[in-house]
Each structure stands twice: as structure tokens, then as C-alpha cells.
Length: 370
Ligand code: SF4
Image: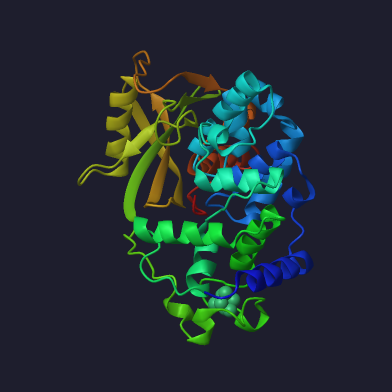
């Protein structure tokens, strides 16, 4: 094994000189560090920065977050995806206030009891905020360690994961473990990239085994990926007396607690119009007239590629009997933006707002992966 002391010294010296100036690196507040770690999971730094700033303007302390309405929390998270992170964070903040007097726990035992905090997040908060000698292992660290030590096998297999955690722990210095953990993550994010790692610029190039054997491309071994499933969905913009119908998804489950336009997945050989009629009958217990097609939204989730067909609809006779939502409302156009929507639905809200001032037709939109 390359000398631990050399690795620690080289990495810490490099980090202090080369680290990016990120907003969460200018604070020692454990709650602020927690915010950044919750947002950074599965999400790029440049996406997170404005969310992080808005979040702390709205909820500067863990008490502010604990007291907030869940719809306000979800609204601030809108567009970041993986909404269970926001719901768990909110629930965890309430526990911190109720059971820890508002102090983010500083022991692994206590912090790991909080919803949404796993081994990685616990390690990041404890080492960065409290200087505890606790390792982290995210995708970037896994890549650096597997190349540095030529750790074979698929990094998503449990045995390999355990070897990597052990390496991360062994390497951690007693002094400045938080800086060291951040240095490993920073190296993976900026130099030891998945494709074309910039080895000549790497502080570990002299001791890296992958570089020595010219085997960077083989480490870490890639996991088999299943191609994303393509699904077709229809949604109805039902309007009455100048207001639009929206409903809240059940709190538990995918995108729980967010609001949406009613609709659902196309079944075999169904047209988008037939789908929307059937879905509204099943979800709301009424018949509708399907009017003009307003737009098509394409959106990528981790496992799905969704094509969303959006129609303007009006109610035939009958009273709404929504059965599959937490609650529902008729909302005037200027208030729609107050509600948290999943990204594809947020595009519809944007479209409706724009079409108030200039009628738009037949729009096709693409949204980013969530
Ligand atoms: S030398 Fe290259 S492969 Fe090795 S850790 Fe540095 S960037 Fe990664």
C-alpha cells in the first residue's frame, strides 16, 4: 500500500491550494453543512448553489426548518428531485429541535438515527462540522480509492463497498479529517474524473497504482446499467371559472406531497386523449371533454424517460369525487406558482403563466434529468 503519510500530506496540501470556493466551505455551522450534504446527493454542485442560498435565506436555522409547513419545504426543493430527501430532512430537523435542543448531534450513534442520514451523510457532517475522525464514501471517493489502490470488482457489490470503506477509514488522519474527506471528494470531482482523469495534475500521481499500470479506464469496474424505461403519460389542465384544478399526491411514495395536474400512464394501444378520459373518470369520478393539446413535455428521471401529453379539458356534468390524492383545489392562475410541483408539471405551470399574456400553442419542452 502506498505510504499513508505521503497520501495525506499531498492531498491536504493540494486541497488547501486548489479547492473550489463553495458557499458551504465558508461555514462551520453543522446545520448549514447538513443542508449542503442533503442537496449534493445525486446533484451537481452548480445546480445546488442557488438552492442552498435560497434555503438558508428562508430557513437560516434548524428551528426555522422544523417550524415550516411541509409545502413550503417542498416548494424550495422543487426541481432538485428525489423529494424524499426534503421530507426526511424536514422530519429530522423536527427531531433535532425536539430531542436535541436544536443542536445537530455530534455522535455517529445519534446522528444515524435521524431520517435521511446514512453512513455517508453522517461521516460528512461529523468530520466537516465537528472534526470527528469518521470516513466518507461517495461516488467520487470510490473512484479515487479504487484507482489509487487498484481495487477490483464492481463498486456496487457489497464486499467491494466494505473494502472501500475500510480504505477510506485507514487513510483518515487524526488531524483535519474533515479537510481530508473533502479533499478526496474534491479530487474525484475535479481531477480524477470518470473519463480522462487529469493524472499529470494529480497530487497522488506518484503513488497511484492505476496510473503506474496505465489502468485508469478499468477502475472502478462499471456496474451494469438497465436502460431507462420509456413511458407515455397524459395530464389534464381542467379549468372552471378562471381557476385550474390541481391535486396533492399522497404523502408516502414517489414525489409524495407534491402537487400535480391529474392524469396517468397510457395503457396498451390507448391514445393520449383516451387515456386522459379514463384516468379522470378513475381518479375524479367525472367525465371530461378533452380540448386542445397544449404541449408535450419530455422529462428524464433516473429510471424513466417520460413523454407527457398535456390537454386543456372541461368538465361534463357531475361532481368531482377525487379518491387518489391527499387534497385538491381550484387555484387562480397567479397562485399556481405557490405550490410545489414535480419538474415536468412545473413546466406546465410555467406554460400557463406565459400563455396568460401571449397565447402559446403546440409547444414541446425538454426538462433535465431528476
Ligand atoms: S493519478 Fe490519475 S487515476 Fe490516479 S488518483 Fe490521480 S487522477 Fe486518479
